Length: 423
Image (cartoon, rainbow, N blue to C red; front, side):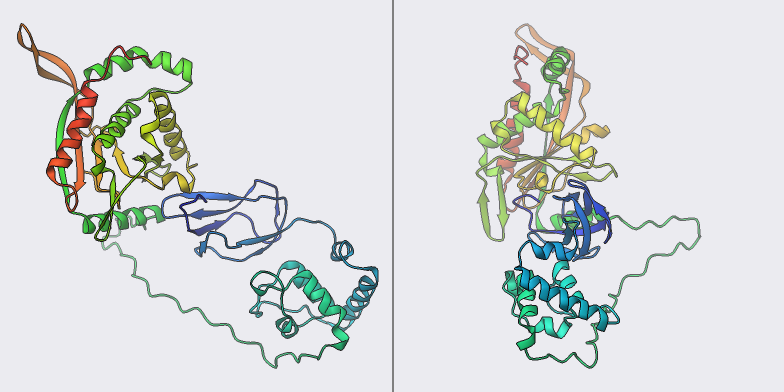
């Protein structure tokens, strides 16, 4: 799940009890607060039990399913670890139990966690739920192990008989939670669609961010003519050599990472009344998901990457986002975010902060514009490639001087781009 992920929600079981599973085959789908992903099996075998259902919230480290990896019968499993005289006793007890027990024992009312192997031994030996409850388990958190129940069977004759309960304990009935009724189309011609899970999460994050931070924006126009010329000159060579497309995004990301080193006051987060200065510069980049929603994967330690490394990181995260292959940890740990609104033709935008970060930069569309060109011979009008940078920041902790100086520094790095730079 990744070091920074603590819990996930089960969204769908891809395998049912009794299904055969191959190693590395997806068993279920999960969702964190950022990413949906599949959970593969580490072994081959048969799925014998699902310990959680759809929509259940599971903590990292909890057992969610049990897969039986051995194809042999119970007796063959027992023979590997138990002395012959015990096997004979167990076999005799099993035969007697098969004759005396008309119906299988239902262990669903047991308050203890019981593995499939323990259940199988209990069923074949006629051990009741009440008897199982009396066994002191030596496993983790007091669980009854195979050896525990075999020892119980071996010494069963000397154990006091535990009477079965007269009536099964009634399970608590789940009370349905009151839900808001779905809206109804008055005219009958409107289509009503419920938000998917990701859109609900995004909606919640955006509203919470606006309610949390005092958003303010600074805008600056940047001449990126040198960058456009350099990229056109080198993009084919770069792709042939590296096997990667050279877009504008890694160039912009490189400038942002440099500016954050110059202005570490933008590379912070807020926790109540405390400001946390981040040691690493981890740049989030807004990317599209297959369903059209947006997600923000993170380039870790972006200031340590050269342009080739930045391009590879941008292409990798963007490609996996489009394919729905991001891992939960890919979206964690961001300290500053960049979003490219120019992809959709927008000249500039006013993006909402990605909490608990205090800044987000929107990259506008690059356009050919008439501009005044200053030369030693005088001023001239020429065609230049220009774009707007829109910087949203949290006015609780970032004042206009810092917010404006930061975006100006990004612009300075872009305008000073070396057209003779090696690719």
